[in-house]
Image 1 (cartoon, rainbow, N blue to C red):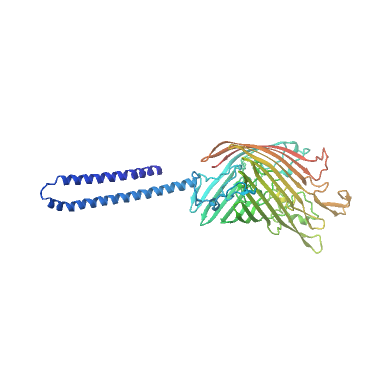
Image 2 (image 1 turned 180 degrees about the horizontal axis):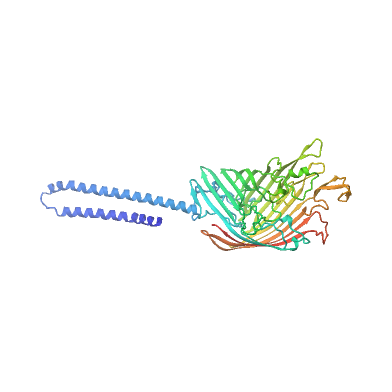
Length: 594
């Protein structure tokens, strides 16, 4: 209808001068004809008589020309209005370039680009990372740097629904029993029933729904984002009949940016999670691998938790921020305490917070939020993109020690750090290297090891832990992605000798009359993991895609895992295997909204 109206207006604009010209010619011809038919008598009298008539005709022509001019001006204004509506619609749909940021875009989208390359002195030239919040890196599945055709506007805000439908199948050579997300720290040993059985599952749980709202308020850009999937806690009979997959919140945050300053708050990806782009909170700008496994890769440092953070962008290629994040004193199930009074003071790692064994998970006496400082640099070497970041973590732990008289309190400062890089080696081939080391930061390695232990005298002592991940992502063609990673995590043993009067006399590490307390001591729990390693690779073909209707792709993953505990002596076999291992194969069909 709009196009039809515009065509009518255009035809009117072209035809109006011609019609006006015809009217003028007709009036002039009639006037000439009238003058020619006058008698040739008293010319002065005729001229005098015809003067008022001529003046009237001239005035009539002036009025007609003015009316035509007014009509043309109205038509031009109407066309200009329609053209502006079309331009705004094209900008919202992302089908036409624009030199100014649209009303609903992030403030950073209007930032000028910075020339990239290598300076004469060989220094890396910066590249702008001030992209809109919707921007996604080339290799991240499901992302887009264009406005969605299903966006809609309410007031000053643009709302964009999104997400994808997943149908996932997974096969494992051992019965890990953890659904489509792998419990890396619980791979069963081959001399157990679970270790001798395979596992196969089909699920749509990883399907995701999102909603983003963004707008400009003066020179301040405001973005809100919520993301949910169906991997929440299940009722006891979930897989018998109804398969009632439970909705859960992944992230839910607000971002406010004005000039060089930025504020983020809500449930976000932790600052300890590597980024692909700057310090962006968008899921598409966070590095959590291309794995189909919903627990990603063993050795990846990550969390999604409540946080409030302040970020400054000194330049458009450098970001610096501090984040205050939800703390949790974590020990897992492999730590032995010197007294039962300590058990309720730490998160025991139970996956089900409603079970009786998880009573401590919600009553942990955290002292203050985890403090994380992070900086990121985004630039180019020639035409090759690079992202380098570093993060530092500060944590504090505290317990109530009833072993002393009078009772006392013990506290401990812990921390850690990471350095991560994502480099484009050649076009669309990215090399990735992430590193992390901590004293009291095991929780950030997917909780595969504890943060601290309680020593025999009731004081706290931290666990040294670290992890690393290296790999590549190669977008061979716009519809073919290959990836591969190797990761490893390590947790150092830490235990002490507690005197015991029990009969017969116990022993700790060969010392009679003592029991061991802590983590990783000989003869301890098989869940006390020393090292966990994983190798993964996969291929992601896009079968079909459309900017207006979305895309359809297949995600594949093969992984081989090994888990080595502290409790088993090296070289032991038979009833005491030295490690556990498993192979996994994922095949997923994903339809992503545009």
